[in-house]
Image 1 (cartoon, rainbow, N blue to C red):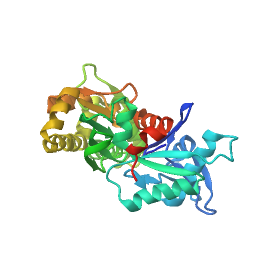
Image 2: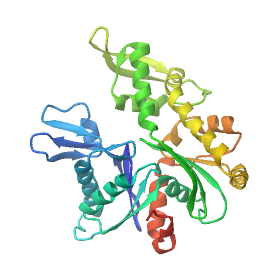
Image 3: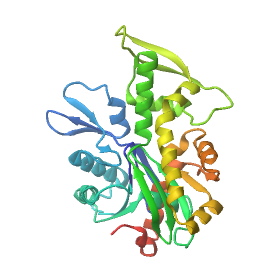
Image 4: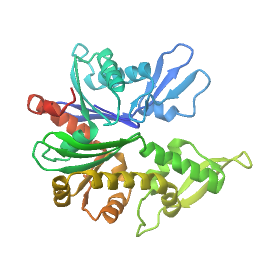
Amino acid sequence: MDLGTANTLVYVKGKGIVLNEPSVVTVNTKTGGVEAVGLEAKQMYGRTHSQLEAIRPMKDGVIADFDVTNSMINYFIKKVLKNQRFIRPRMVIGIPTCITQVEKKAVIDAAIMAGVREVHLVEEPMAAAIGVGIPAHKPKGNMVIDIGGGTTDVAVISLSAIAYGESIRLAGDEIDEAIVRYMRLAHHLNIGVFEGERVKIEIGSAYPLVQKLTTEVRGLNVKTGVPMSIIIDDEEIREAMKEPISTIISIVLRALETVPPELSADIHSNGIYLTGGGGLIRGLDKLIEEKTALKVYTPEDPLLSISKGAGAILDNFYEMKKVCIN
């Protein structure tokens, strides 16, 4: 399971990735019961009445609401196992490199309470590296940049371990919020965070595009207090995203300065792998190439890298369990 801030993905042995849904839960505030999970709950976000609350129980890559996360994991497990209710599965869960022992324990406890028999944690850059086909067991340095919803992990993988790792709690969510702030300041338009996410997906870019992109943005005019919409282009959104993307680039440059010379030589030969939902941002690979003078590779579907890697560990568990965290 890739238990992400924005999306949760589940891989089942022998079946591949069987679930990819938003990490959102709608809770009845009166009874405490869960009304909706995943895509259905995301559609309710910001549209609920006083007795319903749509919650994102994961924040910055860690559990922000234990009970709701437990309910979400339980729901997703039941959904993928369907009629196999008496099966208590073994699970490999991807986690950011920056989380504390208490936060790791919270992930394990939430999974155990949801009916999982055995829980193993793997750091997300390691899972992403395995997911894109990097031979992590070899004595060769490979750099992975994993940009998720809540965290960005930069890691150098060698000999089935992370030789260098750094994680910051700034990623896709912060980019969405930067777009929300820009629309309010530049156009006096108040938009929701999911509208910001939609705009990022449709026209967001980190590098100037050959063909101009535009989209309609809908929200509330903060001056008049009435709903309105405007047309914006990729250049404006690129300006909105500039600050968080610059921070991510600075972390990558710092990592390259810190790693030992032998690993630096390997990275120069092997290039950098860009994974996670952030890998879908247009031109981000090109911008990193320009700033680092290194080749950047993006897999066909970078969002699936962690779940594919966790699945590969599960498929060959006794051979690959050494990559998991004790």
